[in-house]
Image (tube, rainbow, N blue to C red):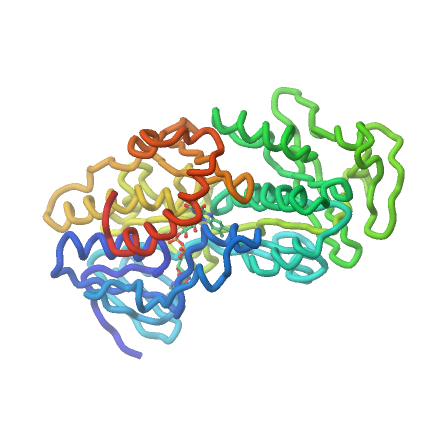
Length: 448
Ligand SMILES: Cc1cc2nc3c(=O)[nH]c(=O)nc-3n(C[C@H](O)[C@H](O)[C@H](O)COP(=O)(O)OP(=O)(O)OC[C@H]3O[C@@H](n4cnc5c(N)ncnc54)[C@H](O)[C@@H]3O)c2cc1C
């Protein structure tokens, strides 16, 4: 067991950790920065959607971590076990301790497969897949999916990139259309949410895709509680809809119009006669059961368990376990020499790499200010986040917003594109420009 000290310690060498470390070292070359990161590889996760849709290879999304660690930073290849912020100390899994003057927490988010009954046993087989865990299996399931229901769903917990469960749904619907499988199949979106998207004009554009382009059946305020992989059943409980609404079930038109006219139970067709009973049935008291051939889901997610036990996490309340950060300065609410970035934070906005692109410069500025004996009073972050919603193999729209789900367009981008309308140039941006910007600009500490 050894004890070391670094001026700035960064926990996590993912998107947030590398971006902040690289920007710090680009701004002040002589800083002593250590990055604690156990993984040998670094993934460009936004492209997992394209891997799941068969539009990119997984190997194209992964690079060696060694190439991402900034040259002047020290790489400590270990897991953090806990943080003792009262002692300015990080404890590693191997028993070593690292002391710091300043800490950046960026350990990301944790997948909790145990959060849904039966999920851990069946994910990765029986047609149950997740781009959050293994996008290559998603593609395997999709290309072998010929008949029945493809169900897309997400948990009631916060998740990273909340648009990702929809993106793979659009890619699936598009693939089925292009391969003449759409009349033997039905795509279903079942979500604990109450709308397809919260901000206009993206909501209108996505509704057009869901209802008109693809005829996707929707189930709102549906909370997934169990997956039975052997029986290929997803069990849901209905949550209350706001304002007395009762439109849980939207768009069974293809059934009503006789395009399908049957329910597929995994083995055979059942002619559907009852209205609004095409896809799911109320069984077992209050549970609705949807039978699927393909199920894509985002697992329930949380801050890492070890992080939740530290004094940097909210001890209670609705954000319990997530890192308590000032919404505009990103400084820890409890320890002024600590900042948080990325998925682990409790910021009320979508957890994305795009959000981190705007968080990193704010952290860098505030950290340098406190190192210079000033206050961390730069309120540079306004909750910006964005979600490139791929709606087909060659079209995308870019939903950009800030706190309170207010639309917030990047001034440079909106000079060239109408980001609220799905288009081919925007698709090119997702497929080629954003990955290049990630590896060659964001990971290298350039601010833009
Ligand atoms: C399917 C999918 C699609 C997405 N699509 C988009 C998109 O289109 N646009 C977008 O902007 N974002 C997208 N995202 C989200 C984006 O990738 C994340 O928000 C972003 O990577 C979060 O960065 P982070 O640094 O917080 O966490 P990560 O990048 O996940 O990094 C966390 C790091 O911490 C390390 N770590 C974990 N535990 C420890 C420990 N105990 N000790 C030390 N290190 C530890 C991990 O190894 C990891 O390297 C997507 C994500 C997924 C999964």
